[in-house]
Amino acid sequence: MDQNYIDKQVQQGKVIVVINKLVYDLTDFTTRHPGGFKILEKYNGFDVTRQFEVVIRHSEKAKEMMKEFFIGSFQDRRQKVSWDHIRSNKENLYIVIQNNLYDCTEFADNHPGGKEILQLYKNQNATEAFKRLGHSQEAREKMDLYKIGELEHKKAEGNSQRWLLFFIGLVIAYIYKSIAY
Image (tube, rainbow, N blue to C red; front, side):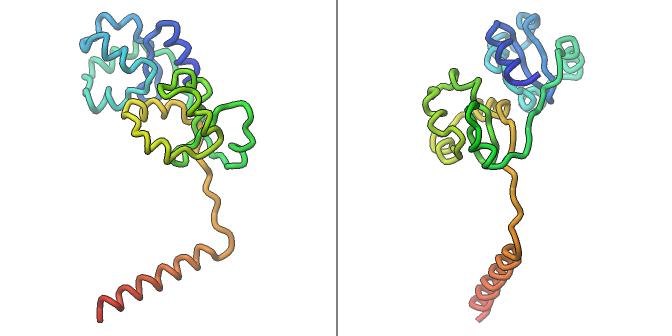
């Protein structure tokens, strides 16, 4: 199961959450949830691992009860990708934020800031714009569900890394010498 599956289930009125990469259908549990329906509604379609284990430390009994609602494993489609791969994309709405690749195709129509802002950054790095707009913690948690890859880091060719280390060493030596005298 991936985020597309979860989104479709939520649109059909289901209450679906992800905890530790496991997917749970809590639809039949909403009226019995001790925290009430509102909290389930708030996190419907999200990865709630942090809320479940850290924010509200659920009991062992609650964890055992979750087995009843288990419907599958969350498919983590993360891969190392190159800028060439991203730029060659014609179909999907890919956006890069902090060296992570997100497929926003399915989410675009539901983006609170509008589909247009996402399309503006298609196949580009949107890190600065994302930071400037001050997204909520909820938005940051949700975006992890759309992460499909990470930018691969190419190793520097030749001796460029050695030259950089040599230059840094010279700067440190100069600073040390200036302070010492």
